[in-house]
Image 1 (spheres, rainbow, N blue to C red):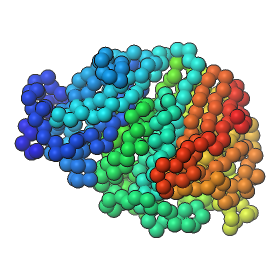
Image 2 (image 1 turned 45 degrees about the vertical axis):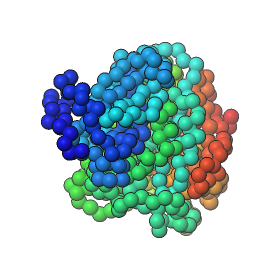
Image 3 (image 1 turned 120 degrees about the vertical axis):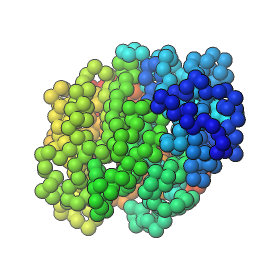
Length: 521
Ligand code: FE
Ligand code: CA
């Protein structure tokens, strides 16, 4: 494979586009040992005129470099108006570069708004299967409905990705992934919330990832999962990351464990490069050293505006030395920030009443719940310092804005907690008026099978009247947004430790437009 004479020529101009001079005969001669599309394909970051299509060539995904040579390899792509590829809307060539793990990100443009498209890739005489994506509706278009799923937290070892297989059948306009696409730690010898050993239905290769190659291997293992591939193949995703794409509970340049910031940032750079390589995101999210910009907006006509946030990279350190703790003086720090100044200003500037609904799509719980995990401590309220509860001043700035603007059109979607939580986000640290509704989505697998209600949840509900419902099974949120109502269904599985479980709606909730209140549907 080393004799592929493409490398030097392919780098001409430093552009992702393939120079037109590339001899056609070479393209057919790329001799892959096996089908290179083992990691599937994906689309994401849709706009009214296009979206990103992604793949990564890895004929031997468990081997170093995925079994690819240290050379750039051309990949043909096609986007069609029909699933039989009779009406080609766009096509071209991209380069799978070794520096990027032979991943390919094509920003397809020039498409029609508000309609589905199908796409596929060819490389080395092999063809991928067909993916489906869709463009955003035209700017300001009047829409009756948008349907999407919100997912996250998919520890590969603690369960099968059955939820993704079911999600692929839901006829979605898009998917929001709140992060924890991979976990750096193995579930071996770890305990769940009830101090029982976490299940381990399959095992990662290698130790905890530190280098780009380590993280690539982890993504490759996960992306070989065909249930996950099915979920990527049906709709465009808005990918984000949370902590485990790098390391548990990191924020900024601060490692969970004692570490030098400059050393941790090396690891973060490796993790972020690998994240970019495996997500269907635009060039604007290309890694710059150890930073990636994943903050973005998208509009579904005049009906829904999604604000997709980064709650890790720009954050100040968790107060009180992190964890589930009673409050400490650092919690009231007025300059504490979750989003950082620039992102916070950007969010507030775009949170208005022009869209019918605002979606704040992010990672960590915003509802100010207390009495969390306070089995041992029944006197002081206990908060999750890694959530917005550790940063009340930052949360109040957002809720103040919603109050001042008299907005009652905002829904927050969250991951991270590995449970479903439905409730209202009240101002004044939970004592004031509800300013938004929050749906915290459960995990795809993290935590193992779970059960309907986790021990201690009844106590948390009785101590927090803004909290309306909890559930501790695996699954995803399915949201149907119309001009009058926002309906969220909690789709859950009985188990993830065996493949093939059925999906069911555990509960449904509705938000009426103009009321920051959530009620059972
Ligand atoms: Fe998680
Ligand atoms: Ca997390």
